[in-house]
Image 1 (tube, rainbow, N blue to C red):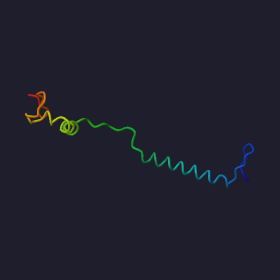
Image 2 (cartoon, rainbow, N blue to C red):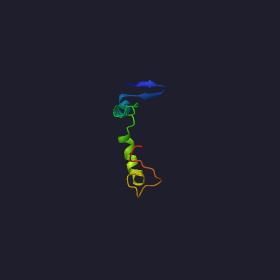
Image 3 (tube, one colour):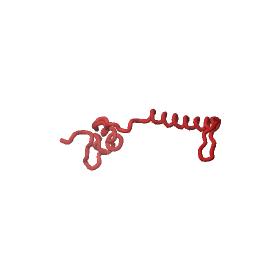
Image 4 (tube, rainbow, N blue to C red):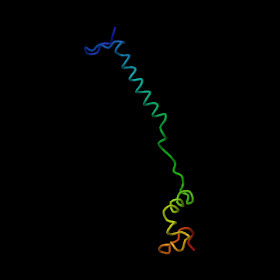
Length: 82
């Protein structure tokens, strides 16, 4: 006993592999959605000591830091402007 559809016969034996593939595809897509990161994230406010100072320290303080002998352009970035 099978389902007739425009001359194509589908019986339980042919439906089982199709059903397995559909189930596997649904599970695979479901796991990707469950493990996905949330779409919206809230940006943290910028903090100088956490976000900016490490960049200045790595790239700028060697020429614009406390060592007067290495200072270029008379610009110091290691202290507040006076």
